[in-house]
Amino acid sequence: MSANAQRVVGAAHVNSSRSRAVRALLGNRVTILGLVIVVAALLLALVGPFLNPFDPNDVNPLGRLQGPSAKHWLGTDQFGRDILSRIISGAAVSLGVSVSAVAAAMVLGVSLGTLAGYFGGLIDDILMRIVDIVMAFPYIVLAIALAAALGPSTSNVVLIIAIIRLPMFARVSRGAVLAIRENDFVSAARALGSPQWRVILRHILPNSLTSIVVVAALSIAAAINTEAAISFLGLGISPPQASWGNMLADAQNYILTVPSLGIAPGVVISVTVLGFQLFGDGLRDLLDPRLRAR
Amino acid sequence: MVIRFLVRRLAYLVPVLLGITFFAFLLLHLAPGDPVFLILGDEYGNVELREQVRRDLGLDEPFWLQYARWLGRLAVGDMGESLFSGQPVLESVLGRLPVTLLLAGLTLIIAVAIGIGAGVLSGTNRDNWIDNGVRVIATVGVAVPVFWLGIMLILVFALYLGWLPASGGPARHGMRALILPAIALSASFTALLTRIVRSEVLEALQKDYIRTARAKGLHPLVVYFGHALKNALIPVITVIGTQLGILLSGAVLTEYVFSLPGLGSLLIDSIYRRDFPLIQGALLIIGMSFVLVNLLVDTLYAVVDPRVRYA
Image 1 (cartoon, each protein chain N blue to C red):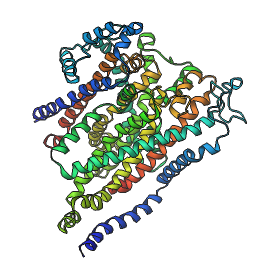
Image 2: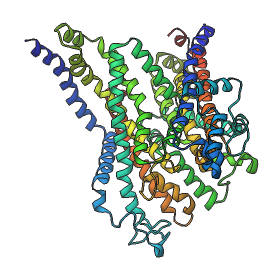
Image 3: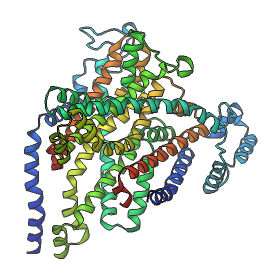
Image 4: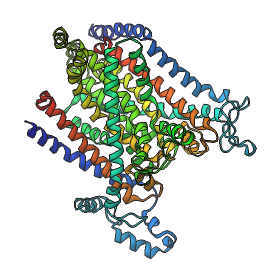
């Protein structure tokens, strides 16, 4: 009996809003454009290696710094490597790094934020002060400082971006929990004798999930940008492995000879970031009815 | 009331500033590589000398004692010396500050001017082609990485057209050196401000006092800029405050792309050279100025909007 009552209280709340959300989401053309870009970028990262016209690391001393041609659609770089192939292989790296970093930040940040918001008290105070301190640093300065301390490597880039993104998840999920905690369905679950872990997992988390998904989408956009920036500075993904950011570092010296070397990676970064932002913004407008009216 | 607000904010500042110093210290303590090696170079093999230098620098002491001593020196403005040039860190860092401040100031002016203009234009032309055009540009503007925009501006305006310098600071080219960097840096900030101003203007336009102002027969421009914009400005101040980190982050990358001798390029150069005292100094000054400017914005906010003071 009590289990049934709980299921009704929790499930009814989640289901109706979810189907409405999906319908409204697909009704917005800009959000769909974002979703299409996101899916295309993820597909490129997943199946890209099978599409590559050339080996992205194949050096060809006789074909250096060529402009776009029928053979090399975007030309070749200073080692004669095919730029298009390097962009495709960079997609897996840039997106792989960004998505896994954001996933790590989300799991840890949401856990900490939810616990802090639910239990409050001293833990909450300490955690939020640490969040303030981390957020007190401009994000790229923090990334550069961490990169300098840890050294350049792919796993360190993931770690750095996860550290930068974590506070936002903690803050947002804490806020969501504070708002949800006082709702009647939470009190009802508690009154029915649910243990605390069950209240958190079954009633609090599912309802704060929506705002977390928005933060995740926008975080991936920011993460792609951050990865590009630190690799551009030579502190992230190191050559010969192509990433969109370190391709731009090479491009600076040869941009007059082969403009596509500098233009192409930047366009790809911009479009991908734009896709995640449009999708995230669309989701947020949808979840915040006050914004939808505008 | 503003004074009480200020005192509370200042008290809150102490743990944050301490946290920043601890972070800067810890970070470079964790860094791989032995700073003694950087000082001694080829003589590193001499074990006796190595231990001597380690003792002189206090590197053999426990972590907390090292941190306390470092903090004590910091309190009197002693940030140590550059491992590379031997110059006092404080001097080098402060010497780089003007270029960064000029760049940030110019960027803010551009962003606020264009952001407010475009935002009002967009908001008062809701859903026609002007509004849609502004919105598309503003949406794309937020997504474009600042360093890539910088490279593209160099390609077009410095290399192809030859109108403006591609690199070098005001010492070489005067204020012309800052035009392209400021445009690159202001892009995402302008775009963001445009979006905020637009939505605030849209909201303000639905208020009763706007209808009253229109009914009185006031000129539309007076209604838009005098009434709607004025009330839309409070969130704009907040956005400027919350986006300062992004502005400073962008400044680091912009200075690097355009080889401007600012604080950001100092940070990056000293990382390449593993010049630890200089990295720490740059980090501290950037972190602290960021926190202080935030405080300034918060105070401004409290002065403008009485509701904040009591929150």
